[in-house]
Image (cartoon, rainbow, N blue to C red; front, side):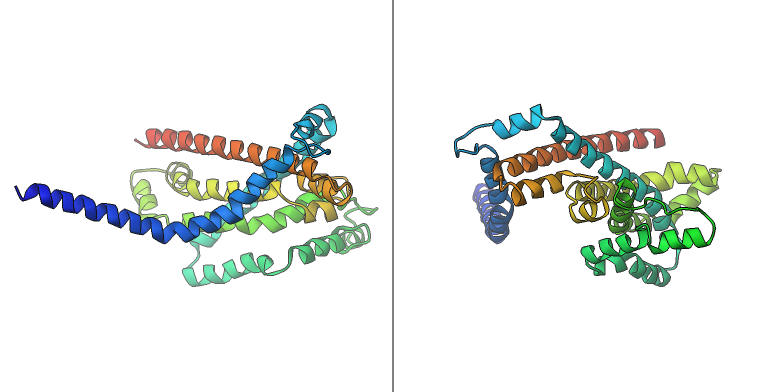
Length: 295
């Protein structure tokens, strides 16, 4: 007979504990609602207003009908994908090298990796402008060393934009990769070697799958940040590399058209969420295939 009251008392205690947890996170949920949900909701609201102030989808219709918007989105995703790919090629061997160093030495090297983050983005962008322009240091050194005869077009084009964006984004991929690689137990690699696996086989079957979560996380971070880049393409692209962020800025600053700018932001947000969802599904499928092959 006493078991039932005890069970009811435990359920009541668990209910009060859940309420206490909800009350503790309520301030954080309120802050998230004020700083994220309300601005995003306001963005959707502005995108559905016509120039006359009536509810309309004319801004979305204009994006569908005018090819320039499609080219802007294509450029945005093209630059973001290329930047992410270059960052993967550069950061993976760098993170692997750092993970193999002694912890104290690796910490000092990580300071050098993080050093660009301590400098203003605008300062770094204009520093690359000085280096890459036709009379910049790189062109002058190349001509003096006889590598080329005339100054190369290294800025105000896609090349300069990619150089600046890769420089900015590289630490955001090195950090999660290094963290994932450093956490890998090297006994797994020794066990694979004892079972007869060569260096390349140990890397692909043991090391790479264990470091894959860090690679996926860093890739998503870099790609999403690249989609919203404004300063670097505007300065190093010289108006020839127009991304969505720059188009939004032009709609607001030049035409004061908040509806068109909001519609661009909404479409970019939805496409980004769709890509993230697809990447997460592919990551689950890839991890399942890796686990099946290992078993």
